[in-house]
Image 1 (tube, rainbow, N blue to C red):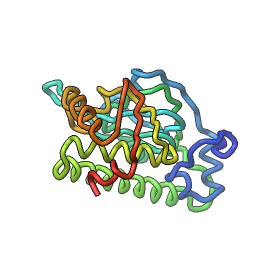
Image 2: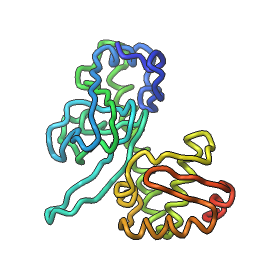
Image 3: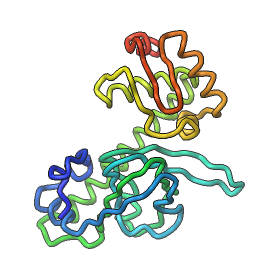
Image 4: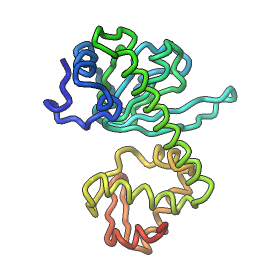
Length: 223
């Protein structure tokens, strides 16, 4: 059985909502798959029979319009889940999912509900909670796109990344800058200009390495 604590993995908010018995039962049937950067994990509108949790690395969720344009929906990392509602309903995947770094994905078959007491109810509540969390995060991102400039969105991202890495002043971007630009709703050339502007407040970058000389000053940009 897969064991989050044994493997020192980031806890999954979805799994943490389940009782120990139901969680143990689901994990006993889990499968782990590895993907390299650029690999497709699942495709929009293909049958989705299993809920997925990112164990390590980063993935992007995106949709492609009839005209062929790509719209990024979310970036997920350790402990975060996707395809929850699709797996619960036996419906097609709502989005394409691609590995933007080498990553490991845990597959959970929630259609094979275990015989544990109240298991179906627990899983349904956990899935709805995860869907609600995704909606809240998406609304926050839309709000940032409407209210903040690209430069301010970049500052926010770097502050959050620094917090995630323990307040470090030297960061490694988890994916390349083309992906970052798409995530922030910017063109690559606009992102380059924003990074250039950051030099004025002590932030320097080279490829995926970023040095922040005054984190508090960076926070104050959008405080």
